[in-house]
Image (cartoon, rainbow, N blue to C red; front, side, top):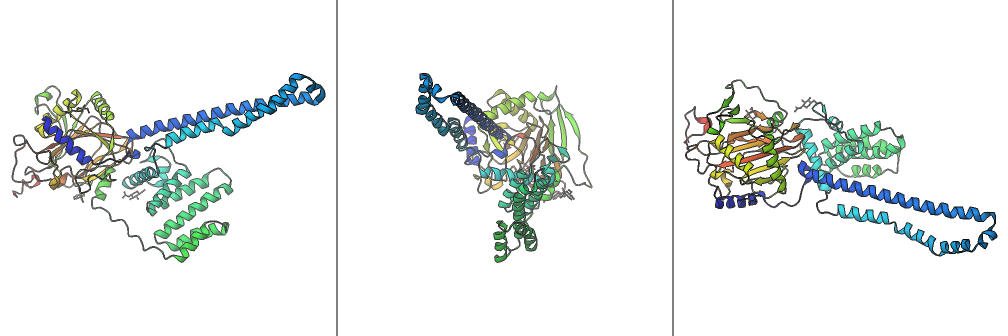
Length: 524
Ligand SMILES: *[C@@H]1O[C@H](CO)[C@@H](O)[C@H](O)[C@H]1NC(C)=O
Ligand SMILES: *[C@@H]1O[C@H](CO)[C@@H](O)[C@H](O)[C@H]1NC(C)=O
Ligand SMILES: *[C@@H]1O[C@H](CO)[C@@H](O)[C@H](O)[C@H]1NC(C)=O
């Protein structure tokens, strides 16, 4: 890429990225690590506070013990005791000074003051997560539940697809999730989580009296959620026992509210997207059986380019027409460590969405964090040369590499990689091909799926997937619609290189037909 071209490219990328307002933690494991560090500081500040307070209490106790000893001595014969000039002096000194010092120390409470300052300092940071962050995290959990068809019970038990992943939720965690879902008006899902919270609370080994208040609150929420879903009778059935048990309960005013307000017009079910069932099925690793399929092959290719003569490419065909190939073992662990190290040096910013009218908005559509790496370092030069050798394309029109990190719940809904009519300035032509490098394995989830082609790919560290987004006619190939499934367990890192159609006259000459239409002889 010429320097001019690069500058234009970077300008275009900045425009595409739009304005990133602030960090959003839940979407990226890299940024969650920062929060972990902040929590360590909170932990240490609290530990310091408790230690200082304990030391202070010990000083006070010693003071009390000493004075008490004096009084025991004096009680035998007060005259005699005070007849000693040193005793008399010490009593006076205590009255004038020591008790005053004690009082001032207790009231000033320096450990508490230090603690307050430290906590304020840590939590007042603009980047300290707020309720919106929590909502985002809850949305992420709800998304996982939906895409992977998980029950709230299994999630609370920490069981994902039958595998216990080493963490559980307590009743109040489930309650908080449920409340946020309620606020987000996801009433059905909220009800499921309130039920789990209620069950976990009932199982708790505590006396019934303490459980009564939170249980009543859960019933109230359940009633309201059912009311919103149009189940008024059920809402009343849920509220009545709460009020019967405690007539001062706030549930009484909730009941009145329900009595004097007409039930909301029945919320119509969320309109499903046409791609959604293909998406969830493929994300769960299930393909529909196909009646006629050309057999796909795995093979070694040492002829594509001289650099593969000694170490042939390991090619796995995953789809024909449009061709999608996985090249295994393309990057070594040390290459990947080098790339990720460079990416870490850039501030990871929440991904924007390319194309679309409001491209500067940060949307749930794409939940990840990303950065861009040029080809000036030796490792990136190597990556550049690999893509050139495998694709056969002229890299003059390649974008620099986008490195993205998807945390738990991180996903990218179905989209094509081409821009079509929204071509960005600075490039010749549309994105002719995509090279997607897997820079990590993912414990569970995070598949790449082609919703129209019945194809799912599990991320395998070091592999690269390549396909063409445009037909030979350079028209967009809508069949290449693809998505990144939400990460269920783990962290997903990928690197994308998009090559544009400019300068490719010799490597992939234009034809008049679209790829899928070759056999029918249809021309445009
Ligand atoms: C979801 O899982 C339940 C069993 O837990 C099953 O009955 C149902 O068919 C599944 N739904 C989808 C869409 O996979
Ligand atoms: C490539 O990236 C490095 C590291 O961010 C930067 O220092 C360098 O200026 C970039 N080179 C070009 C040509 O943009
Ligand atoms: C869903 O997948 C099937 C089978 O691969 C495909 O024929 C259909 O076009 C897909 N539907 C959508 C909306 O992508």
